[in-house]
Every structure is written in C-alpha cells, then in structure tokens.
Image (cartoon, rainbow, N blue to C red; front, side):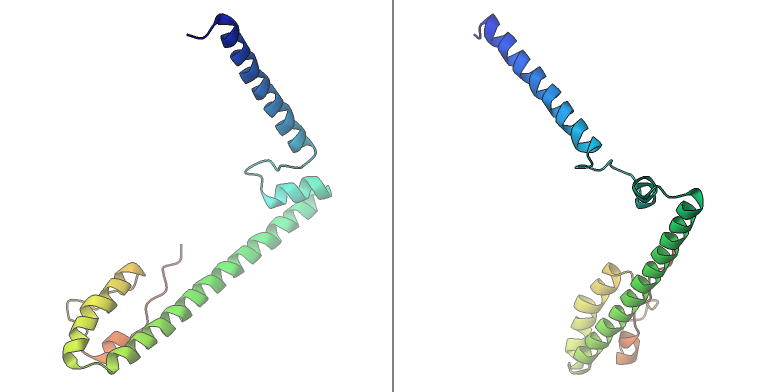
Length: 142
C-alpha cells in the first residue's frame, strides 16, 4: 500500500505536468507554432495580412469560386474515369464466350455498378455488349 507521501508526490507530479502542458501549448499558439483548430484560411489571411473588409470579402469570393471550379473538375474527371473503366470492361467482355459473359455480368459488372453508384438497366440482364458498354452516370450534384 502506497504511503501518504507517495500519493502527494504523485498528485504534485500530475498537476505539474498539466500546468507545464498548458503553459507550453499557450506559448505555441501565441507564437504561431500551432494554429487554432477550425479557423478558415480567410480568417487566417485576414488576421495575418491585416486585410481590409473589402479585401477580406474579395478573398472569400475568389476562394469560393475556385472551390466551385475544383469541384466541377473533380466531377468531370470522375465521369471520364468511369467511362474509360466501363469501356475497358466492355472490351474484356467482348472477348468472352456467351457462357463467360453471363458469369462476367453477374460477378464483375453488377458489383462495380453497385459500388460506384452506377444505375441498373431495369430488370433485364446485360445480354449485349452495347448495354454493358454504357458509361456509368456521374454522381448527382449536391
């Protein structure tokens, strides 16, 4: 059983560690070694560059416009990538026998359509290469 002096020593070491950690983190934030979490780039630019309100508004507009353009490019890339993928699978399917195509449709095309958000073609199976070669649809825009 620990003695009373050992308990007090452990308590003092623990409290000292907390106080030292608090002091070090406070200094790190003050001297910008650490950044405040959740702070936007516009807020950081406004503070660090001492932007005027007009400059801050314009910076916000520029970054919003660029974010929109980046998202459009991501969607275009994703659609193009899916088209290339489905064209490749269509080429693979064309070289298979009809029996292999049935297995291929069941084991390879449908799981990928489900995983990547593609659409089903109703209740008919993917009997023809043209049905299978249809590119996946781009995800709906939010």
